Image 1 (cartoon, rainbow, N blue to C red):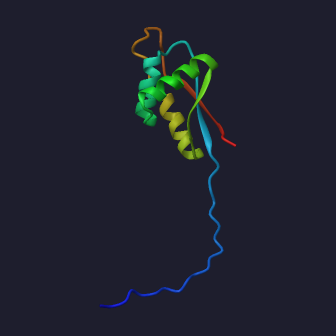
Image 2: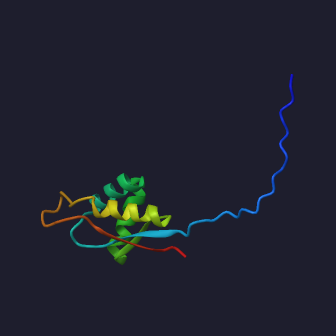
Length: 106
């Protein structure tokens, strides 16, 4: 039986670089139902219904809620997905998607 090759340790001066985190913040309006918000958060972010309800309630009461924290590039993608999600089919006057903004988490 052969012995596994032993590789010499290689010293590196590489430092890991982390991208700073960004929050995706959902903004409140009066043209979207809790059901819409809960469904959107489940489909776009994988939040369970209970978490979606908590966030929908926070948006309703405070005007905004952090729905996701990630890298800037991914936060921009998620913001675009919120903006493209479409109108609430349960509210006739609803003309379009909800609004989201991005801000540094630190």
